[in-house]
Length: 246
Image (cartoon, rainbow, N blue to C red; front, side):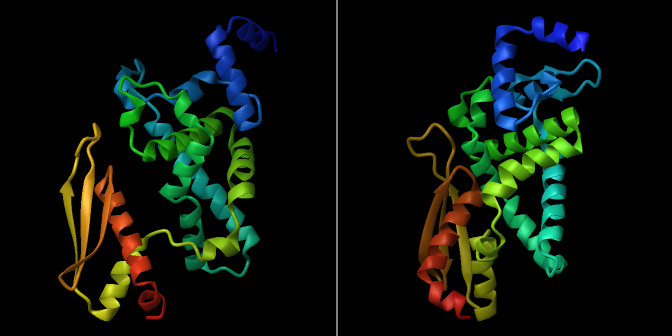
């Protein structure tokens, strides 16, 4: 205890502010602040760990956090949906930990404020929000163990966001749904992707979605995958009756 008191007394004002804000966010006292700091370091910082020789950034913690989220959510679904088979549980877990949902969580918690980077945050793609959230979960696990990690995920993810009946009807990939429908109906389709920076400083991609040789939808985003998903979503709603009744 004397060591902890000494550490708190010697903490800088910046660390003290980080500690207070972080404690409010995660709902309990963080012990190893350095772990949490690492969870918000962007790879553009280019700092090297002298012990491992590896670059210091959030990516390894992101990997760990992804695994912890999947484990906790899987456990929750296993207990809450005793009638669900493996395929059903896997589908529900995928919807909860989808990139779209994790990005939403990262934005809700305004985690971008903590990120340290040598590039403008305006140049980050949307996925940075979900990546940082996963890194935070990884830091919590290393700092306080599984029980606290589970507590955080349950409070911040399960309680406010997990509604199984609503999730059952949620579409996580309009592209997969559209392609499946085209294959079932033996319709020819094509995603035509090209770079479309325009006046933006960030690279963008545009997509034209063709069905039987005709353009039926377009999409534009900072990645090819997102642009295709936007075009697919528009196509889905244009052909919703045909797709849902096929």
